[in-house]
Image 1: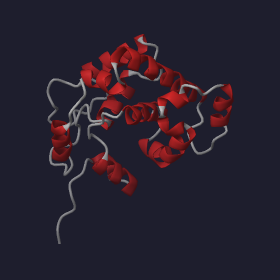
Image 2: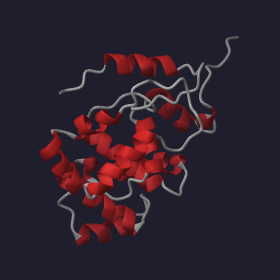
Image 3: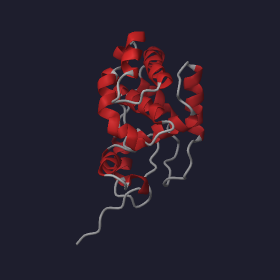
Length: 195
């Protein structure tokens, strides 16, 4: 009988967590829609468990037009009321309003920087970490948070931004020996970012 694969301890409590860990967390993302989704969901997660957000992710996608920034940017007060009545998502007015506001910021950022991906990948640490440090922020997440706030974004504190960086592969915090760590590193090495 073979031993089960080694995984990061945080994902062991449920099969949904394990699937997310094995197939998404720490793998590089360069698609603007997926990046916007990840950043929004990390904002919604503040004060809650990530499992709560994962369990509601499909509902969030449905409620927020699959996180297409152009669509969400057109949401208005009636959409806010609709979302506040949607039991399938986290019904937090400030987080809902910030998601709509931040969709508008995505459009502004694309106009000035080319894409959300081009912008966020500028904050990649110069050296890959040897594994998780237990920290909840970094110099890079603090710098990105500060710059996003300067640009008018909301719910993008250093801790939220660091969790986003972990989720979208800007940092690889899989533990040494985790069966996914090398695959995430290889995917990052193969990622071709548009200039």
